[in-house]
Image (tube, rainbow over all chains, first blue to last red; front, side):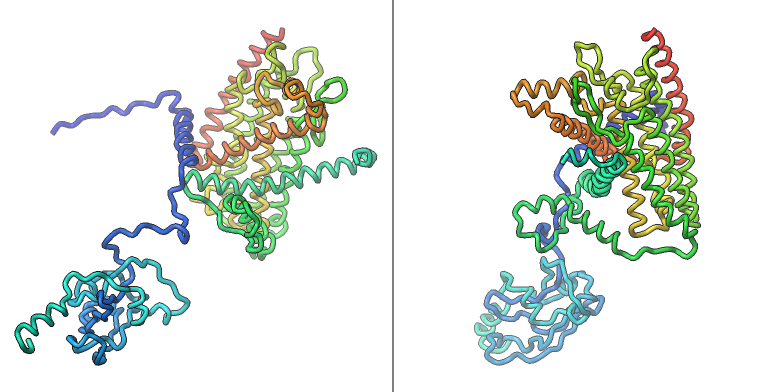
Length: 180
Length: 388
C-alpha cells in the first residue's frame, strides 16, 4: 500500500492576514445577493409535484362516475397506524354498480394518524384509493382533520382506468351464460 | 423663517438642531435593523420580510414596493417593542439594569455632535461645515465619548446577575480596550500630516476633509485611503471590533453566550441596545468617511466647490451655488458614503464567521497593535522628511 505523504503547505503572509479569503468570500456572497432568491413564496407559488408523489389519500370514481370502492376493508386492515375506518353497507339498487355486493356506508381517514405510507393504495384490489397531490392539510379541530367519505371523493375526483375490471367481469359472465 | 431661527437664543438653536439630528438618526438606526435583515436574506437567497402591510393601505398603487422592502414590518416591530410588556427579572440589579440601555444611547448620540455632515460655501468661497458643534478637538471628542459606550455593555452584563451576560460584558470590555489602542494609533498619522509645523494645530474632522478637498492641479485632494492604506485598513478592522460587529461580535456571540450582554433584556430596552449599536455604526462609518474617504467630496481630486462650479457651468443655473443647494448636495454625498459603509458592515457580517475569543485578542494585541505602531513610526519619519 502506497502511502502518499502530503506535506501541509504553510500559509503565505497574505493568507495569514485572512484578507484575500475574506474578499473572496465577499465576492461569493455578493453574487448570491444579486442573484435570484432560491425560496418559493409559498401560498402564491406552489412547488411542482413530481409523479408518484404520496399526498393525502383519496377515494376515486371510475370514468363512468361509479364508486370504485367495494368496501373490502383490506386498506383498513393493512393501515399501519389504523387511520382508516370503514363501515360497509349494501349497494343501493339502481346505482349502476350491480356487479358488486358492497359499498362503503362510511369511509373515514383520520389524517392525524395517517403516515402517508401508501400501503392502502398498494393493497386495494379495486384501485379505488390513491395518494394524490394534495400535501397541505389543516383544520381547527381534531374532528376537522378526519376526512369523511364525501370529502375523500371530492379530493379524489375521477382518474382514468385502464382495466375496466367490472365491464370485463360482466362480459365474461354474459359469455359464460351464468354466474361465474 | 430663517430670521426667526437665527433670532432665537443660541442654546435653543443648538437644542433644535440636536433634536432634528436625533430625529433623523434614530429612525435611520432603527431602519438599519431592517436593512440588516434584508441584506442577510438576500445573501442567503431569501426574499426577507416582505408580507406586512396595513390592510387599509393596500389600495394605493405602487405601495407593494414598500411592502416588499419590509418597511411596514419595521414599523410593526417598533410598535411591538414599544407596547409589549417590559420584563424586569427578579435577580437583576434594578437600577443598573434599567440604566444600561440608556447609557448605551447617550454616547452613541453624543458623538454625533462633533461629526460634520456636509458643508456649504460661505461668503468669500470659504467652506463652512454643517455640524452641531464645530469643535477643534473633533476626533478626540469622538474617541473619548465613543469609548464610554462600553460602560453600557459592562453595566448590562454585570447588572443582569447571570453568567452569560456577565461573560459578554467581560469580553466586551477586553475587546474594546484592545482595539481602541490600534484605532487611535491608526489615525494619528493623518493628524500629523495635516498639522504642518507652523500651522495652528487642530484635531477637527472638518480640517481633515478640507485637506482632502483639493484638485489635481493644486497638488492635493488625494483621499487618505490612497495615501495611508494601512491606516485605513487598521481603522476599518478596529471599527468592526469597536462596534461589536461580525467577525468580532464577542459580546453577543449568540452561539456560545445565548445573547451575551443583552440575554436578560427584552422589549424596548433590548431594542435600545440595537438602536445604539446601529447609531455607533453610523458614527463609525461617518468618521471613516471623513478620515479616509474624503468626507463630502464626490470623487478624489474633485472637491465639492469644483463640482458645484461644474454643475453651474454645465446647466447655467445659479441655484447650484446657493448655500442651501451646496449644503444638500454635500449632505447627500456624505450620507451616500455612510450608507455604502454600513452596507459593507452588513455584507461582511453575513459573509465571515466569528473569530474565536483568543483569536480576537491575538489579532488585537499581537498583529494590529504592532502594525499600527510601525505604521505610525514610518509615517512620522516620512512626514518629518516631507514637511521639513
